[in-house]
Image (cartoon, rainbow, N blue to C red; front, top):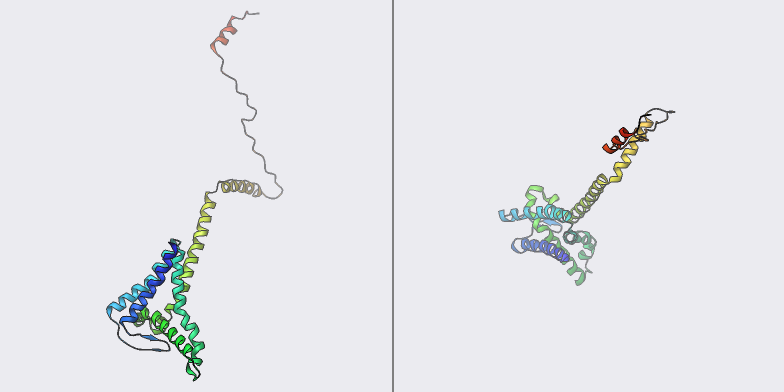
Length: 222
């Protein structure tokens, strides 16, 4: 069941990207930009997708400890960044005359993945700019991992601090430190006087009963 979260998030990001690819031409093509106008629906959908991918889903997964949600976002981020990592090394092979059909098909697939990953963010380029928007798909994985790890570390130290505050041994240690500090504050060479309880050695007599008082009165006077 938990792995279903991974599948759901990963396929959701793929479906949104394919939706932009199927119904609108690409704006970001590998190596160039094809200018075009964006509709209001595309722009609103892009902002919603941006908030969901970079804020809502990573924070929810980290707070609720949904590791597989973070894993789904991270894998999608890796898929989106993979063409940028591989295509520069294929540039010479694709441009040469000795390029075979396998290399051409592999390059075409990587360029298609690049355009698919960039498509949902293209309408935001009018606000953020082309350079910053083009890098957004490659920021999904680092943001998801950093938020998850950061919140878990914060939670660990917060719980440790709370347990330390609720530990009864700490109160005893604090009292002993304060007592030793009192003696240390008296100055060098001084000896701390031990406080002896006043009730030590006190004898408490039981109340006399009326019969005992009567016996005392019946005794003959000498």
